[in-house]
Image (cartoon, rainbow, N blue to C red; front, side, top):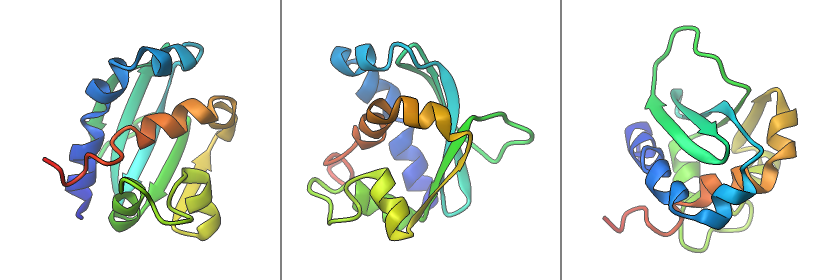
Length: 130
């Protein structure tokens, strides 16, 4: 999987997340911007009250974000498998495994951890099925 394919998967987050009312409700207190990166290609995700407002692929100049989750494209592919291997089932586990890095202000990530984890996992099982 390439970084462009990861960006294409992430571009589907609005349709995957915004139609799941329980997930949107879970994230209703989170509004902010974060970065997901694959092989150095940034994807900026903007959330407003639990709804994905925008997903944009970089590169960017001076784009603000609160926290970033960076991994290689192959790690994201393994994360999105229908049943991920141990260590790839969760973004925190990927960090502990050493295949992902969490950067920036981690307070909003940790305060909304379940919501962010479920947002990033929403493409799980759909990658490669198209």
